[in-house]
Image 1 (cartoon, each protein chain N blue to C red):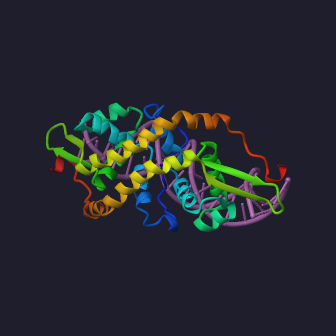
Image 2: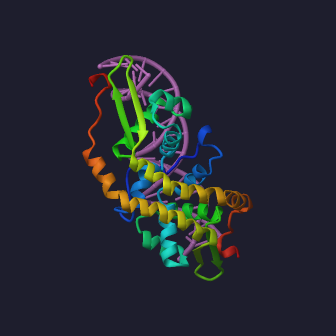
Image 3: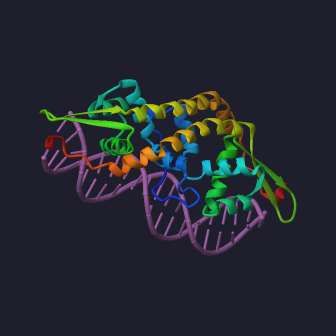
Length: 128
Length: 128
DNA sequence: CTGAATCCTTACTGATACTG
DNA sequence: CAGTATCAGTAAGGATTCAG
């Protein structure tokens, strides 16, 4: 997920990669979830709901989501300024596959946790 | 997703986060895809197929996938050593939601690309 | 062949301070 | 309120070298 800027040739032009390069970072999914739950939200509200995100990361994340067309940004020329964020139709449509992923995660979470707990570092190849 | 080690309180105990923290990195999905396509593969074959992955990252990725129970590792005590990797049943099951994500990505890839191309940096709040 | 260990470079992230 | 700019710490990724 997080993923880094440089992409590998193998991964190039892979839509899944392209998506995860953007949405697989630390905050994007969180923002999408919060926006789905909250509807249209102001910057400060988003900041308060996620609470441990920095101003910088929230702004950066929103910019990217907006740039990709998943989130809309509406500026109201008032004093004080008021900027509202919401999911676009494409943003909503993305939640569907995300739910599929979530379902798998919930379903297999315990199994994964157990696998991790039971895991022992492998022996060298010749030790067996 | 590359996602980073430290997780935020908000994200804690979120299965989706937990999954993406592991699988959202730069190589995990690639390895899963290659293993799905190739069946049981040796380390060197995986290395050759992905070709631009470093030895270090491949080993690390395989370790984590094995640890999470998505990939199995079979060591053959031969000379030279031979280690074979394959998807576990859970590994296969994960491909299903992954397909869902892939379908979305393929379907909306062009739309996202256009959104990016059309994007112009927003004005300051008061400029509007 | 299949890794592990080390070093080094790069990129992400958060804190802080500042602007419209 | 809603950001941007700068700075510094940390973590990820690659190259190289060595080992079982």
